[in-house]
Figure 1: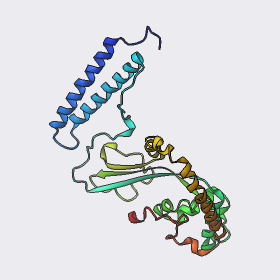
Figure 2: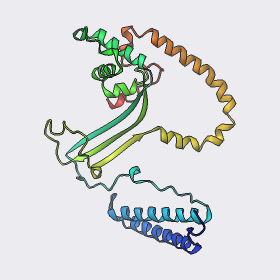
Figure 3: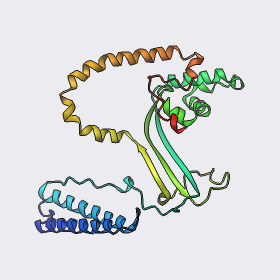
Figure 4: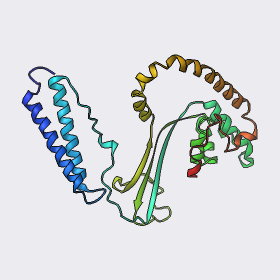
Length: 262
């Protein structure tokens, strides 16, 4: 930014005063709130966020300094809940993303499903990744695939679960043609998000502490990688056995994380 376009010191000072005013207004709204989802608190929160963001930008433009505040974006929070206080029905919306990390492992699992299904003899849908995915998700429940994704050659991506409230349960087949088009964010009771970005943010705060342990960690991880390779090779050798279809098995010896939800 050029010197002519830079904000003045007075403008930065005024922005700082606006933050103080918004902070007092937010505290007053919190102290007088009428319930957990008081719209007055929500408005005061947005005003405080806007004032802090404006001050942060002016401070940087004028002095090349930043504040320690992190202003959440619109996608990071839900609007105030306006659904029924005592919902008579609810909907659970789940999205899970996967990458096909090992196509050969995926198709090998699909071939085993075909071999166990007498009715599917001669179809051979397992010859393509597309067909293998259809067989996999047709055979196993989504929670079981989530808990055994490595065994199926998949790699987890982001996931989210939304619980939405309704006045009454919809009629059978009412929303099947467009199941996700009419989701009202203001009726979301709660949501749970899983993303590697959260792990990255946590790891950033530990980088300095981990520097001293890098040499030790390298010595420990090397044999672990060899062991993991051996386990993968053993799993590939056993792909044609019926024992691998047992949902209680886990390739890495990890507990099934979503078993309790089922």
